[in-house]
Length: 150
Image 1 (spheres, helix red, strand yellow):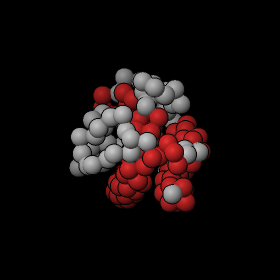
Image 2 (cartoon, one colour; image 1 turned 135 degrees about the vertical axis):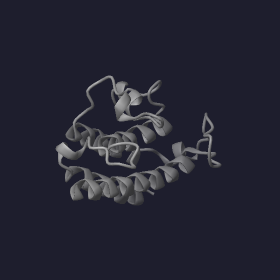
Image 3 (cartoon, rainbow, N blue to C red; image 1 turned 120 degrees about the vertical axis):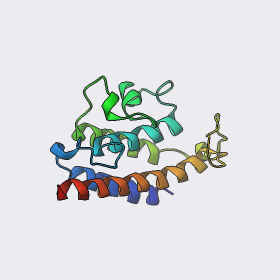
Image 4 (cartoon, rainbow, N blue to C red; image 1 turned 90 degrees about the vertical axis):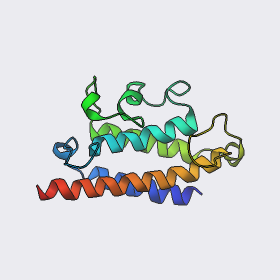
């Protein structure tokens, strides 16, 4: 499974590492968020679902929860968001931690339920995370294309 995760996360990292910091906070018309928000969201989602962030994980700053969880938006941010390079570093660190998850861990039943899907184990969530990252990568690419055309 880690080969697929590496492919997915590497695609996200490659894209983000080539985004100019100046456009990371541009919110084009018809988009709910910014590229920076999507990058942070791609970070906090697996952190929450696999490591219990923000209550049971100190792998990333707790302030990221208020900025990047589902339902948040840049217009409501109270703190200065992290730079893209900081987020890239966090994504790389997380990639290592996710790759180190054991098969036994992935087979464990979830201690929580999600309001969508039929996820029973951490392995089920792991597979959903792959789809989730690809979905957000597509949104970021579309946003960049729009911003570049402005």
